[in-house]
Image (cartoon, rainbow, N blue to C red; front, top):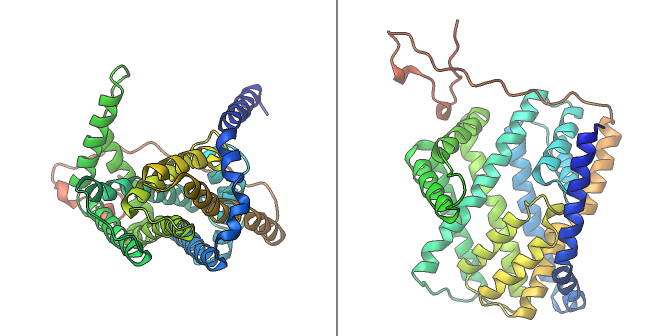
Length: 367
């Protein structure tokens, strides 16, 4: 290992140690409520576990589509093991992606399909997460009252699911929704950071990343979109179930914002799986959503127990099974992405004749 790599790894470990030290009070507060989990009915834990299994199943479906394989075993084992590894080692999505790439290639998935598929699946899942807060804002701004019972909460989750799919489909079919979102986000970021270099070309970047995803998924983009929406909605309903299990009945729209905050914090590479950041952020945002302090702590602990801690031993088992079946030999690194070709047209070739990635067409070739 080069001295530069050792230095970067040492700095990352130091940042992780400092972050965990600063977040220790929040972690101690959450884990201090462990005894209160006895008051939650086992049926609620069974429901939360079933929702999490469904959420993981959606992730497996997205990855299987993205790497273009018909085999489920390598996809499931690699995702469980990489997810578990990312929750005990700092590094964020880059660490998870590297482990997943290695395991899929060892299982015989082609190198190019693995590299592009992991990138595309991560873009789809993360973009869907970023769309969630936008869907909760209308209900919050208009002050729509939500009947505090589980049926209405589940219905709210179904409505959010439909809206997510609709927004995602519109962003695939037309450029305007992504351009509008990109311009709004760009303006907001530049306004919040007046003394920094302004962010430029965000709408164009969103369009390029969408085309990357479409180039990988082709005509199956709508399946990936449904699975990505299902992945987050089932995870969100897990948190809703944890809240109802402790007797809390907050507005689902506010819980959705709390869930989005926790999910984004979980992607921070400063601690493994956002440990500490998620606990502190979720208890605080749930309190803002109207949940009592004690109930927020217990609900956070129950949610994290099912969604964060239980998958770790499952991932360890998956890693052992993968090693036993596919071995542990070294794999070739992912290919470097080629530079984007310059678009050229013959004088007699109309612009409309270019293949569109949304229709599953192949990119133009030059002779």
